[in-house]
Length: 231
Image 1 (cartoon, rainbow, N blue to C red):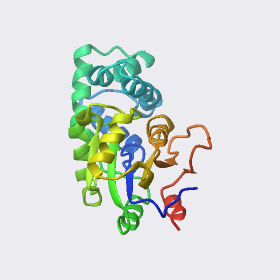
Image 2: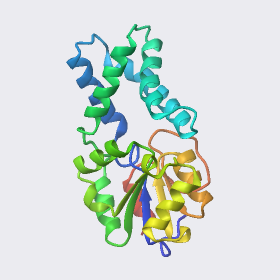
Image 3: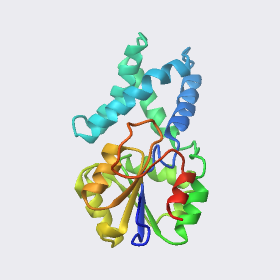
Image 4: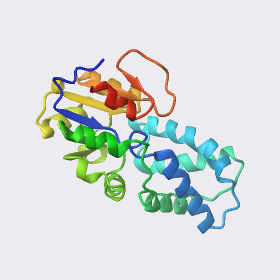
């Protein structure tokens, strides 16, 4: 369980935690394929793309690929898996359109606003995200999340990606809070939970994409469950 009596600041991940990445991503690709007149089944594309994207983000977190390679590799590997020949130029066009349009979709996980309204009455709220600086700020603004948060910390701006201690340390320093008074809520055991616990923060794992069970911290499967942990 968490000790809510000592918590003053709560840090949220954004994608897969508040902002429904998979739903918004699917709508973005549907828009792009229609715009480019691609005769491609979007559901079949996503069946391959989703795990490939997760794997590429893991490589990006580990500094094994850079931002540009992440954006292009996840597409090229998906088209390869589909036996679809797409030129490098077309992949770059799709990648650019994806980044350009992704933040225009604003679906959040059920209960996002209710949870944030409740928590904001007692705690200072912040975001720590590995997502790209400009895109993440557009997502936050367009989906109506901006009023809830005092700070947004992106890996691109800070120069370190979760779970690296530096991104958490700089966020805590900027928020003027010690680890013992801070809580991290995120979807990734590796990036969010382990990274926060390593620094002495508390954590709640919002297991939005079926990661393995563990005993490191409370696990929830809906945002509404988080409210119960504070009662």
